[in-house]
Amino acid sequence: MSRPPRSPLALSALANFRDLGGIPVAGGTVRAGVVFRSDDVSTAHADEGERLRARGLRTVIDLRSAEEAAHTGRGVLDGDDIDYHHLPLTTTVAAPVGAGEGLRALTTPAAVGEWYAALAIGDARTIVTGFEAVASSPGPVLFHCAAGKDRTGVFAAGLLTALGAEQEAIVADYALTDAVMPAILARLEPFFASLLGEHHDPWDVESSGAILAAPAESMATMLRVLDEQHGGFLGVLNRGGLTDELTGRLRDRLVHAP
Image (cartoon, rainbow, N blue to C red; front, side, top):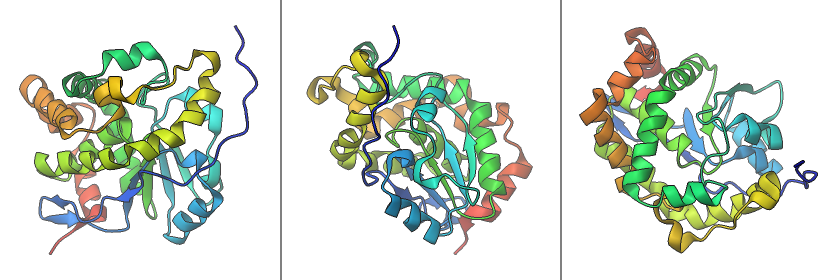
């Protein structure tokens, strides 16, 4: 069945944008104003693009599926002044999951954390490719997915792991998203309704549990699973191609020593 014609994009302010600056890592903290995480910038207002360009943004890493990226394009950050890297961490629409079956399978923090661990393992090489884009960027970098929670959360956790952050700091950064989930869902509902058409099930937040929230336990579970079964996130990243040379370049760019 063919999908109905795409409706005009509903543009709105970013709900889950933040600077990783100040997070403690080995030998210091993440340098402010250099690496940002966000929800979907492709559906942001034009003034968001102007604000980010004013902060010197030069690189965008898009972690969404090919289907999502094709549906909205690059939005306000489209242009020759921004280096764009499409590095999907899922092959189809991911999170918040557009279809009901996906939601029902990921209602607990344990289930979400195990899904995150599977993403980290299956896409370690893609994550490391993203690290190369971060290390090579001539200016600040922004990475994002749809909600800025799941795929973005896994990428952020990997980057912080590579920089030597303690797990408590990684979990704390992830959990900051929980407070803005209502605003994130309000932004995403029109997008998923447009993308999925008649196949979109309106989200029931109360019954959906952890997949439509960001409890600390979800990220803690991912890290625990990787530690107990896969030699830790750093081991996963090393097997995905993370080298001492790349780690050093990341640290040179991102770490502010006291």
